[in-house]
Image (tube, rainbow, N blue to C red):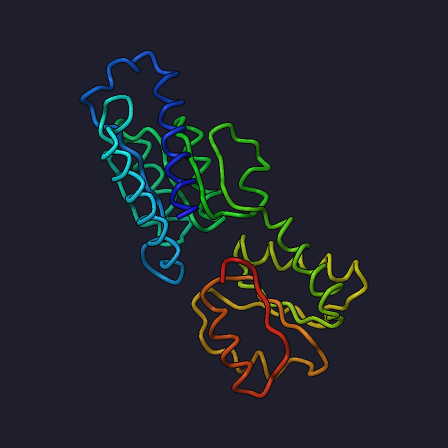
Length: 257
């Protein structure tokens, strides 16, 4: 409920800002306002993309039931970015080429948002990402880019500090999926954990889509007390196989998993 309401407020305010700034604002009555939704609707990150799509669509339904915006009905144009940089460029160009699209809600994956936002900047299209948390998303100071979620440079250090100071962990294995989100979060976690006095005894990587981690796990040193994973869908499989090979150490990860 909270996320849905925040999305609705952001959607409404973004469209109003664009409309009011336009000399054609007074001509919107009776003309549909179209918002684009760019998200992974297939693949490993699809759960997040589908949830985001449903939240936005619900917000639009409620807005239209309340009379729309500026007397106009709000509609959605949806595209699957497949969590791919290459596909994101094509999706972003498609949104830019549609003159009826006034703003984009998206994307989910940080690397995709970073790639797509440059395309949107070039065509002057507003982008609101509810989920992308890499600092790079907003550190480039693009005037068209906004986000809801907390940044990885707050989350990674926060998790490390909690595990070191409150839980008493001292020897960590850090694993990441090599994406902008996963690697960024893992690197920030490892840096802070080490600075606090902990030791990162191994930092292997996996690939998005991997499901078999037995070789990785059996090759790890056994004297660690926490495994931190930076990534998304692979987390459940990694944890499951940790337990199957007899590893009882604490498993922890960021909001993505």
